[in-house]
Length: 128
Image 1 (cartoon, rainbow, N blue to C red):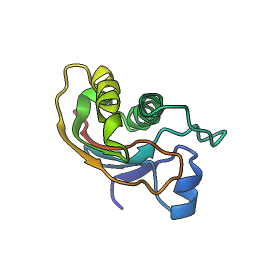
Image 2: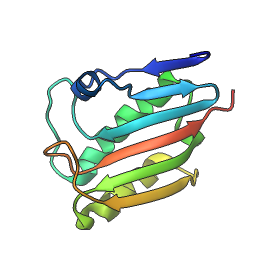
Image 3: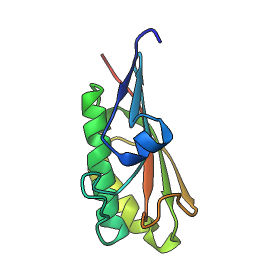
């Protein structure tokens, strides 16, 4: 795995399913789908927007460990079970994104983790 490294967040889901929060491969950073769960306590904040903020904190930490940031994100996928939460989740993402405008897909679909109201994954391309 020449030049490939893994970023772990301590999520029990990573251990259960055998994946990494992020994979760094050359200039590319692939961040796995991330729910808005406090991985230390297992708790979810109330509301999709608060969960999105927590998921974005986890994503931001993974990007930073990979040597990237939200400015480097080129692709985002958002999964929201309840269509009425799309606007709140989108606003949370937009605040974090700043002036960056990556490609985006939002899908309304059930999630694998009970209690999760949003799951976000990103792809970033590091400049260095």
